[in-house]
Image (cartoon, rainbow over all chains, first blue to last red; front, side):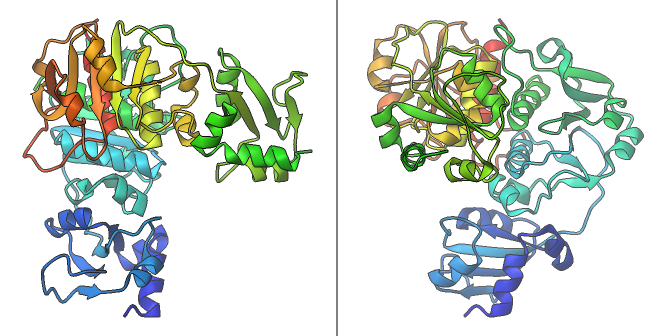
Length: 240
Length: 240
């Protein structure tokens, strides 16, 4: 039986304030939950409508479908909902290829970008503090389990980029053709906000402005930031 | 003043059945509406809360914000909503680079892919008949105006691919490394359904199976179909 206070707590976790206060976040769907269970994330509690995990784990609670309806964030609830602990911040050194996000606001975009980092083995993902929170439930869903492996670090982006000695590449509309740019194995790639691009204080720190060229007559305004990230990461990785 | 029958008609257009019956679809937001007004699409009626189009067009009707609330599909309505005519089907010859979609279901994915075709100047986009309808309002929104230039054709995909003499490339998990495949300027690229990939009858028609290689240890299941399309179109276009 779900208690009132459990329901209240879980529902509150759709707000960043309460996620931070409780250091907890929600993951839904068996497949994605399994990826988190197999990672370094610590399970707080798992609610399921069936004993699908074949384990007598004392943190698993069987609930009814009606109860699941009360705590799910999805239109169609997915048999299980888990609450995990938000891991302690770990400062990673900036090495290899690093992706830096400056003010990404759409949770679907951040989730898709986390999935791309996972695919392209980009272990360092750093985000400006005004980037959407990665433990937002929509980010968790869109990342499809990749968040269990790639955890973004929220940093003072200007300070962090100022400190690195690696070359910094930024995606711009008027940058150098990416297909004709020689790209290093190690460096930082910066993508900016959906509407406004990379912010002024960060623009000044660029070593090289790059762009994905538009084909045909110029007509469409821009690519979606997640698809642009896909193409740019592919370019950085394809030759190594 | 919006009449009851106008409201009923506009609301009905969120269903494919009524879009087909009336041969009409909805576009929201000034920026996107302007792109459709500047295209070959024929405006049926434009509803706006302010005279933002600076024209005395007899098809424009000023309405209140409260009225706009009654017809919008968006959480936050965007000053204007337009109803356009669905253009007559035009059979295009398969030439140049063609993108073929086999059973894409998510409207956001189709909208993003239309935007990608627009960026990469891929004029031929063909879809299997079970692909989500491109005049679905979520596709229209996600395509950000690109649908005014790139209109997908819905076809019997098996028949169409059977008829073409061009090489057919399909995206698979176990295909040949795309970075090591020599790609032609003309050909067909097939992307499959989000969950099940390319369907069996279509698989048989492939000239070459291709894949975007995964970096690092194998761990994540797949890329989102829109980001995979971004990377593959970039690969097809980058050398020409």
